[in-house]
Length: 400
Image (cartoon, rainbow, N blue to C red; front, side):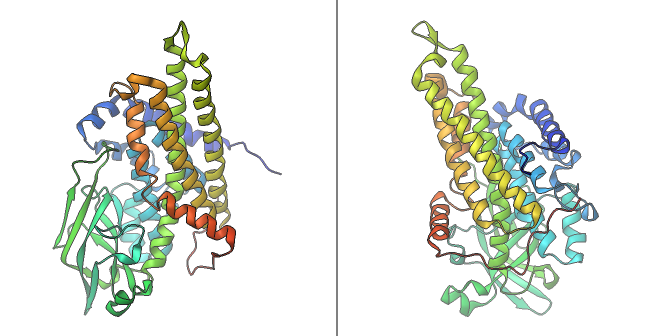
């Protein structure tokens, strides 16, 4: 039997996050966005609600909830502001879930458990000045010297770069494979902020997600203990793609929340604003834009819910998660653009949220796989050019 009803537990999770974000963040987000200021206090609030370890097992400090709960949290957080969902994407989706599945027990004890409890904040370092979607284009290197690796390189466009305590970082350990662009030469490492030679910075002139922290970091002879290598040498690319799949899931759910935010703001304004003697909601072309938001929201939500269900079942979901991420982010960009259009001149004013929605929506069609990358992936699946093979490590099915 198929049911589209969320359980009472899921509804409670969504309502709890909705209440907290509406009470603690919504009244302040306009000023924080205008001031380009990251509020660290929100991290404590999210930790107190056990959001920073929402789907990590209790034995490793998490809340032990399922992957649908993670998606619901992301949708509700981005409904208020994108930067809150970004925290979930990098801290939980890209870093903690990766440590949970690929880390040793010692790594989980030292890094994952405090992250799941919200005592430490974590992020993910793959992108470089000359490498984004082209992961094998990175230039960072890691040279083994006895019981440690020496890392050199630079990462950029890293969310929480100036905030995080722990970083999952990718670098070349095989220089010959690097020359051949053979991804089997990439490896992954857990890097601490306090390691000598590590330095970070904040990008000041972003266009959107202004209340979030985005920047980069440099590694100048950073010595990383060999026990901080994640997985085996040469598994870095597989680990990176595994992490991105989970991150994309959070982005898809979050972008769905942004569509809903645009819809609610547009409906509210269309009922209040009058032109030609009647509310603008009575005008046919305004109705068309609102109707598209309605259909896009429902479709996007069903797509990420399907991906979450597959995760709960322990089934491969690369294609479904890619589709959810692509669809939801592209439709959220359209919803935000139409939200500005419905608001007219006021949509161009900082006094209304439409402009913030629009600025925030653009990033998601770029990071964690551009819309063009996901289009190619979906076409390749349809044409039979791409088929998923069993992986050495899979996300565990949810067990109550």
